[in-house]
Length: 427
Image (cartoon, rainbow, N blue to C red; front, side, top):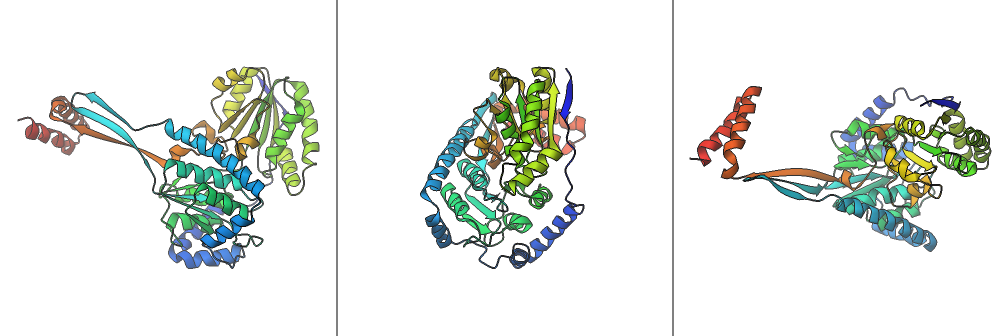
């Protein structure tokens, strides 16, 4: 199996954040100490927001009244798909109980976390879909307290855009804060502005948000450490080069640091996509155009392989966040591919469907993390905990084995907790 580069990434311009981690750690420290007062000050300094941080029920109701009915209907359609898929995920696992041996019973319970904190990006774009993906999934899992934060914008009466507030209310968010960046993450994690401290933090964000989540991991749970979004198309000579090129450029508009790959065994397709991609990027409005052009020039790659096995091996090695197959024999690809955040099969599908409305979650592993983890799901909000119950019938062998292994390990105290049960309950 061989592969060659038809187009190789030139590399993206670096934004110069060498001290990012130290800066975020310092912000988290002052936020934990200064709490609400510090969060208010940072919001005023960084986001120029002078309004209320806690979005009131009345403000949300007013925002909902301003959202066009057509958009409400579209949100309802997408929400239903996301809700139903999350329900199916929840139903795929269950509480169990099994008698392993006479007198020895073990089981598992599924317990939702008490509080989830959802970050909803709100910078260049209003991320309606992120609000749906995070809040809906937490609610289906049974989380009692779901809070959301989103960066305030001057053009939004309540700070958070009306459409996001409507979506959060529709999906069941219990509290909403007009607060972004590190201060938004701190409010969720530390329980500021009347929120219960989050047990898990979820949702995409910029590099400061991602670093804040990474630094807090362990103290709280997180969905994943996410970087810039990335996307790959696998295509053979049956694929339409125009569709393939649009699927690559459509994802490249996320930003100049978003890698996209075409993996193909067709030199003709590779050449045509290479010709089309910059032309399609130039059709986009600003700032999307600049982002897509920079991403394609700096991080876009076209990889030529000598057949399906080499194409699949290349995809597994890169482990993209989004993997779109536009090739013959889709069933073979579905069973062969093993490292991706979410898989899109056939030209009729597209990553944008999954990003917005198809039902699968769009909070996905980036930067090759799909080698070892999947995306956000109901399971992230559920603790799978175990229990056991022992009766006298199981004690002789169970206690003897436990004591033997414990003494071999040098753990005499453990051994004696087994011995005493033989003495106490088997007289």
